[in-house]
Image (cartoon, rainbow over all chains, first blue to last red; front, side, top):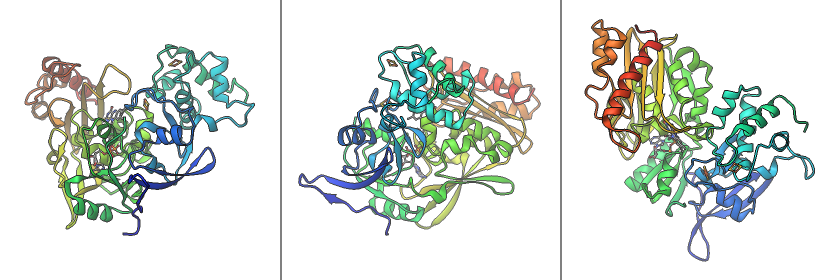
Length: 172
Length: 275
Ligand SMILES: Cc1cc2nc3c(=O)[nH]c(=O)nc-3n(C[C@H](O)[C@H](O)[C@H](O)COP(=O)(O)OP(=O)(O)OC[C@H]3O[C@@H](n4cnc5c(N)ncnc54)[C@H](O)[C@@H]3O)c2cc1C
Ligand code: FES
Ligand code: FES
């Protein structure tokens, strides 16, 4: 059986697995315990703390990242499952340090956030949504963001932001 | 929440996965999309000591025309079912129901094989495959066998699969046209159905399956018999809760679920064009 991963034990005796993942365009490697969730590898090992943990129970979507271009809750995926895959987090979305992604700009212009806790996940989910459905109706936006909870805004301005972005009302 | 520690092995093919299951027995669990297994492992409701990752057995991700049926690889994700032109044309019920599962993030990861093998009576796809009278293909060390959907769900979160068997394919008969509907009743976005009803006309008869009306997904057999005997949709739907055993939880009492089953069955039948 040649497709099995090799195990290595570190000094503490923990069995770890070596992974190599493209994160925001760069190859990142690490030794992870198999039970390490992707979100904790991103936050604790790579220090990409833009991806939040809201519920830890697959419900809130605060931890949403893209895996091969599609939105995924990174608290419900093992880091080992991401081995060899292409991950995009909120840190990798903007084209440069002084330019926002059109979706981020849309959230800014339309007051699509209050405390901001849900925002990274909301933006990642919204970008994935528009990739699948570039001109959604308001109802499609609401359904498309069904996996993301916001405790502040009442969603109205979030939906407005996504519709504005889809309509090209925010320059990149 | 972090799952308890486990050993991780990745299978490159179904036969490799089955060999690993044989080696590790009931200590091992297959990991497909992980959207049922990982939440359960976080809560320690599942504590496998070996996790066999079948997520990369990509040759089991397909939706093919099999002549009189559609053949779907067990590793096909909900999103692929939801967006399949072949399903939209030949078995629209199944594609639609896949689009009702959870939320987009869940549908990007969850697989039809995982959903069926998990055998949660509150899940959507098991009831859809049951309503269609589908067939499940299980592969074990001695080869493959076919299991009728009606024989597959054996108990609460239990299926007819042996410890060393893996689901490889799901076959559903072609059921094109408008003679289908799925009613999913819930109170919160992205949630499981409090009760669901799937109705579909297939091979000349009308089938109805119910979600969350017992320890397994159930066919509304009294309703089906009444329809076959010439009853109207409204009359037949009155019998939807017969022979079911609705659970109690914080969402609903059995009485309320029985009521929902009757109402949702009537709506599903009427929307499917059964009058
Ligand atoms: C937030 C959230 C909301 C959800 N909402 C819904 C909903 O509304 N409706 C609904 O129906 N579901 C819902 N689900 C469940 C979701 O559909 C799961 O994806 C699905 O039930 C399991 O598929 P999976 O590929 O993720 O399986 P996994 O979690 O990987 O596996 C589930 C079980 O099946 C076994 N298994 C997996 N593949 C196979 C195989 N090929 N052969 C044999 N055994 C196998 C595993 O060992 C495990 O025991 C939700 C999940 C989440 C996290
Ligand atoms: S932290 Fe992942 S869904 Fe809430
Ligand atoms: S802005 Fe506070 S949770 Fe959404």
